[in-house]
Image (cartoon, rainbow, N blue to C red):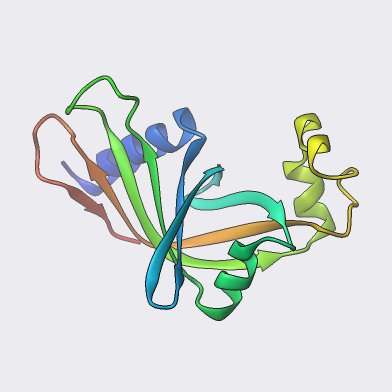
Length: 140
């Protein structure tokens, strides 16, 4: 599979699967939780509160790992592994762009001072379980 085909497949998995796992590093060990991700040209964004452990963990060690995909249909389900670095973003424009009404369960609107966005810049993205092929890595 060439890099353009790989890019198209990875983009499809990212667009069709908004829920995934985010692993941060705590005391040299992984700490994983489910998050909702938004893809913008392979940069991932996820809303959170600045009062969570994950924001503290990212400020201490920005290395993260994300899994998206795998719908539970079987061993052939496509999924992606994203390795990258995360940052805590407080841009008002970004927060408004990503805001959804169901966030009001946790925040008092897009201007809530505790509402922040994690920005994940991938260093590599691997496509897994693609028609019994070996894992394919997108060159970024």
